[in-house]
Image (cartoon, rainbow, N blue to C red; front, side):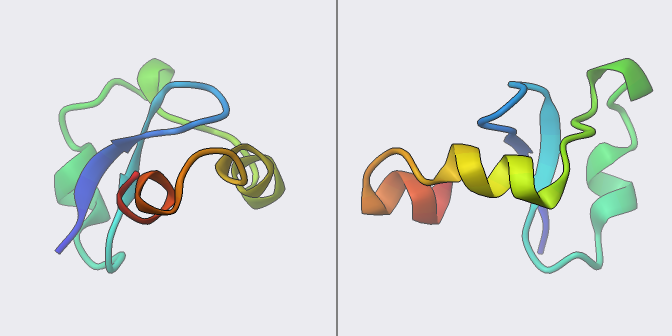
Amino acid sequence: MCRQATCKACKKTTWAGCGQHVQQVMKGVPKSARCTCTAAEKAAAAKSGSFFSRLFG
């Protein structure tokens, strides 16, 4: 199941989970409030924080 998450790089709304429910999760989020970061940008931002914060977002 997917859920909303906050991008660590841009602080906008993105998703986390299996990927099969992305449309349902992002349905109420305006396009201007959605994360548009590349995978490399997200990976660079995710390297900070504890094990649990990286695991659970």
